[in-house]
Image (cartoon, rainbow, N blue to C red; front, side, top):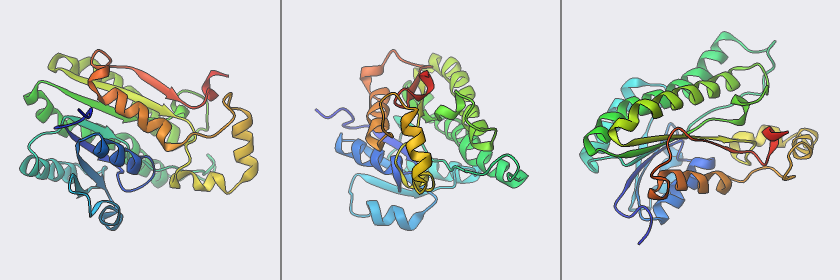
Length: 245
């Protein structure tokens, strides 16, 4: 039997990058996958032909859109067994170039988005008496990697994940967090355009390479599965050893 046969998995940022890979892997493991993304056209292009993938347009920074999304889920599939808060944006601006609007935008999407996801999935998971939430933070939340809104927003994910794990456990709901390093996705293409930056990162990484989406996706599948049934509040760093230096 496939690991997620009969399960419903909700994934944000499901139209590209790591999220796209997550949708593919969970669907191949037998799940009904809710692929949510603000890019409706990309969702249709990627998943329009998949019978077990439900597509939902979602701005993760909008409380109203989260509420509407879960109302749609309840009508179409009834429940959510797994929530993966993956959607996020980045910035390469220096502290001198960052505006208040930049800070608010990253905080709303990267930090507030996962909070809203947990807020709106909680009633469904409480009613079921079980659930697994995997939040995607970043290694920048663990090391001094730039005084910028990206690091701050991912630090917020770490804090709310720990708090949720402590509170949600009483209802059989597990909350764990993954801290990826630099993963080769469309979001990191800006970095990849600078060979000097990339080579510098590789030199500072003990495993001497950048991460691939599957490096993160495999960990997400494990933490969402019954194999991790006694794991909550965990923080799994997937950065090739960068933060260990």
